Length: 356
Ligand SMILES: Nc1nc2c(ncn2[C@@H]2O[C@H](COP(=O)(O)OP(=O)(O)OP(=O)(O)O)[C@@H](O)[C@H]2O)c(=O)[nH]1
Image: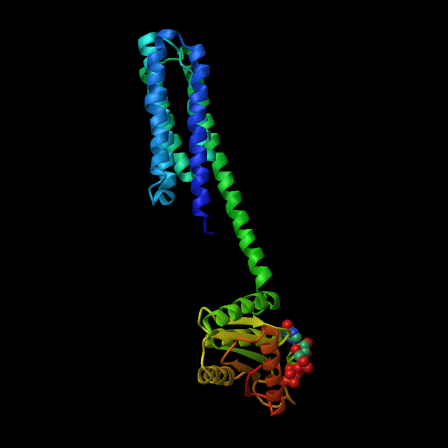
């Protein structure tokens, strides 16, 4: 699925600014807790280290490849913020014997992983680096005394839960996307032939007609119908009939390969193709190719069918100019041509030059 870049960028910038405001908000609470001789040190860490780091990332967000690399940048951000916090904990303890709380590390991790959206694998990597940093800090400066072990367990446990929650969330989002794609496909495609269903076909052909009108190009509609299909079904069974429908769809896909070609299942054994910007000779060539491919398929027909091999009849409506035509009208013209092809003996095509 394609992400909407401008709104995603804006959302991330707002999240970063909220992060910066939270750092400032926590400063007020922390300053009430800290002895005044540590203000300078604390303000240095928050205003001259952490805040510039966040603002640097805001500035980097204007880089044109930011969206592509954002996960790595945010992983770097959470590591930088956590290590600046470790530095503060260490200096507070080393120079002032003050026990600075470690909870900020956990807040940074949850904020960056969930609000900024660091994906699971990078969240694991960043959190492992941060846990190792915390272990190192406790090794060189056992700030929390006999609570060191429980502090290490609390930080490691919280960062692990953070990464695991990200894993679950990523998995749920992935499953939701897959389900959505499946539902979208089901709502657009006929499951048996894997061609567009009637509704989706109509939508797309209306769009193609509008486009053809704008560019003043031609349009053709081919209506295909399997010959004596009732007899085939009655002889070989419905399931075998379904196989013949699949062969028809395969043949259509082999013949019509342009991105703009619209292929649909119009009804039971009726199929439809809409082509744009094409000349009459090319359309005739395609119709012949469809008939040839049926001959090559050599699908034995039922006893009593007009031909020994399965075939289809094709009605073609060709409009050199589409200025005044509607999709219903040109389909109707193709239907009339199909009727003629059936009348003339089936296994052939009839082309009608459509003029309003
Ligand atoms: N197996 C199968 N048969 C289908 C499906 N949809 C429609 N049919 C059958 O298609 C047959 C269409 O029969 P008719 O409309 O009488 O046309 P026909 O026998 O092909 O005769 P002509 O069109 O004159 O050549 C019917 O027997 C339907 O049951 C389907 O999805 N699967």
